[in-house]
View 1 (tube, rainbow, N blue to C red):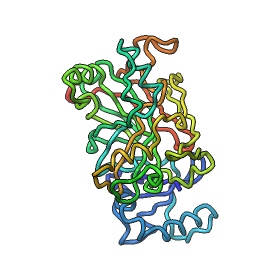
View 2 (view 1 turned 90 degrees about the vertical axis):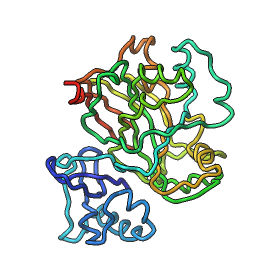
View 3 (view 1 turned 90 degrees about the horizontal axis):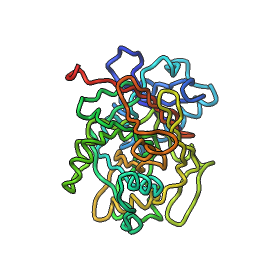
View 4 (view 1 turned 45 degrees about the vertical axis):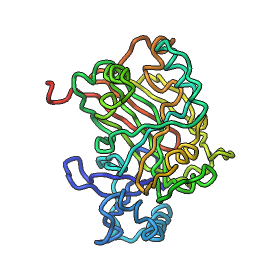
Length: 328
């Protein structure tokens, strides 16, 4: 299944929960907020948290949606007529991993520092701002963050159940679904503050984009690559800036799996349904890594740039950079 959070019209201020069916970007949206009735969860986060209560109802509606046997009172929208939001606009927590060796090696090489051997010892992550999540659409950035502004091509998981001290062998069962993640990065701010061995803080906290869909694990089953340390998925990952492709990677190339990351995250700590964990940047997935290569040379994002992240099975996340109103 592919879940969405959306506003029925571009001017609507109320958000609804939906299911998407058909070609990504051109399909239909089933309004679950209406279909589940007056007691429906108020958000996709609430649905994930209470999914055991709603699972049979949602699966029945999904099957009817696919077979075109929905009740006549069901509300459907053309996907291109609604405003898609981040699937989980306010996750209860958001961490980001550092799972792709190719990215780590290249980014460190471009900064003139050697590969760090501790990368191979354990999967690392940091907490980012779960209250600054954006979906498709414009990203308003203040002037200081525009200095060496970068994208990061990532996938993320949303947890579907609570746990603690989860083993990598069991961790995939805690995943509700996957989505695209753009970990926007203000590189000048990031590099300055990380000299103090903290951060990335202001280099990252202004926006993280998720979406446009939250795709359940079963939807990706045909691309699953099983392994002793958790599953990977054979999903091609691309980024386009102003229509030009700059990134090309694959989610199966994670050095550390999401299961291993979740094992580390949950060590001695409770985790809950609705938490978001990013993969970290795929190889070739940011300008920090690409600059100096044959693809780009000292290129950074500026107002007016369109950034499209595309992951097979997860859709296309389209954003445009604009100068924040405070600096206009």
